[in-house]
Image 1: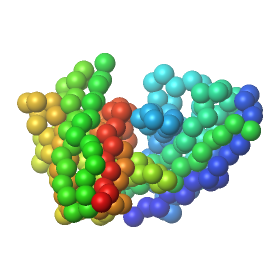
Image 2 (image 1 turned 90 degrees about the horizontal axis):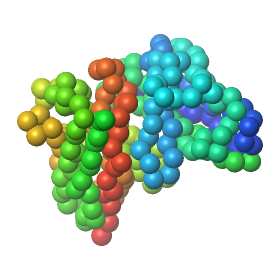
Image 3 (image 1 turned 45 degrees about the vertical axis):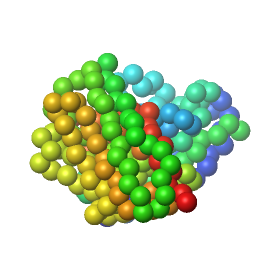
Length: 108
Length: 119
C-alpha cells in the first residue's frame, strides 16, 4: 500500500498571501496524484488531477506540481473561500486508493 | 448536470447492518466506475469500495473487506453499499462518487449520508 503524507497538518495564512501545501508518497506514483478541497459540511471538490492539471472551473490561483514522490499544491492569493481542508490522493497503484491525512488551511 | 444523492444512513448498534443507496442522474450511469468514500470524525478521507461499469469488478479496502458489499443497478441508475457487522470505527459520512475518465479519481460527489455506529 502506498502511504501518502501531507504537511503541515495545519497551515495559518492571511488572506491575499500564498499558501504552499506538500504531499509525499512512500513510493513513486508518477504523476497520478489528485488534490481535493473539502469545506465543512460539503462534499470534496477536485482541484488538480494528473499532478498539475486544473479541473474544470477551478480558478487559476490554484496550481499543482511534482512527480514521483513529492508534490505541491500552491494557492497564489488566498481568498476567504479557500480556507478548508485539502487532501491529496494517489491513483497510481490500487487497490487501495490512498489519501493523505489532510492539511487544514486556516485564517491567520 | 451530474447529481448523486445518497440515502440510507442512520444510527445503528455495533454488529448491525445498514444499506446505503445512491441515486444518480444527469449522465449515463452504466458508462462509469463508481465508488464509496468515507470521512470519519477526526480522520481523513478513506476509499471504501468501487465497482466497474457492468458490476463485474468490485474492490474493497481491507478495513471493510468481508463486511461490506458494493453493488449497482444500471437499470435504476443506482449504487448501493450493504454494510454488515458494523463497528464503531465505521462511523463516518459516506459519499457516493463518480470516477472521472476511468482514471482512479473522482470528479463528482454526492453530499454524503451519515452513518453512526454506537450502542
